[in-house]
Length: 133
Image (cartoon, rainbow, N blue to C red):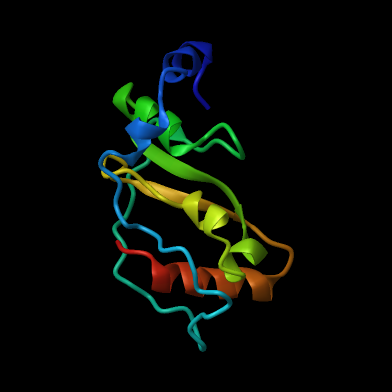
């Protein structure tokens, strides 16, 4: 993750900063609704990791305003805070909010925690269906 210097710079971010430039990315909801069958495959772009600064904080320290500031200071690849698979499947808006990204986050990933392969497969299908590229 970023060092103390980057963390200190990020302290000034506000909720208003986060609202500016957000993409729809994820929608709150699903409420347990997810596509059946195998995970749909979309064409994926290969990520060139060489020489890239990758920011992947866990819970509570990697919110959108913080990631946005880090992006401004040179983070190439950003990742969401850790979201719980079961909460996403239940449609909890607060959990879906963790997966939102800013338009400046051009290479963005999500972190999902779950306790079974079936749950993880279901949430992967739901995220695929509910998010935009």
